[in-house]
Image (cartoon, rainbow, N blue to C red; front, side):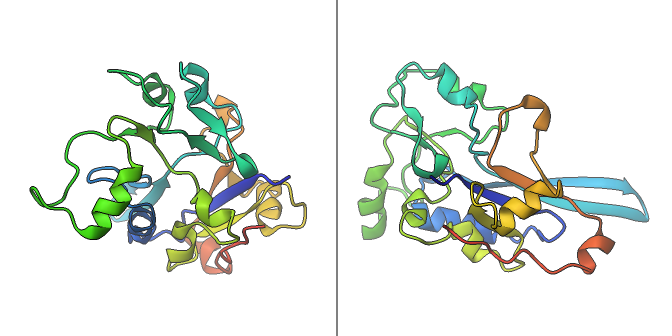
Length: 220
């Protein structure tokens, strides 16, 4: 059995949004629905200031606060421990408790505009938008369809600065396990004790300059 995970080196993320666009293109999400968002954090005072870009996506928690409050059982863990949402079972009316339960704010509801252009859908949109049910909750699933086919998530493949490392957390010899075991890669909110599969590396610019980038990882 595998447990897939991801490490993101914030010192190498340049805020180019390639991961976000690759994700949107790969999964054909509806207008306004982004499975990855980029947060910006500024620190210091002039002239010593710095900016960090933080890609935010589903943390793939083993202890799933979203699933714990879902009344329909729509949120489960699939192959490789990836957290999945069955859009056909996501039938809560009104407020979605799972959206509020996620401490990272990465669950989104499909609602409102279904086209970028008024009253017009491209053939691609007509075909792919059918998979996105109106009113259903969605989130990153680490490109589950790609992973089970032996490929990397689209965000990892698209990152030009090699800031993302994908791998199997149950494979002792994997680069990801080595990074997490070294304590360089840490959970965003370790205090919540959710046992996530997404980790962040936050080195100083000097440390990053002397190290090689994350290699992009492997899917198995």
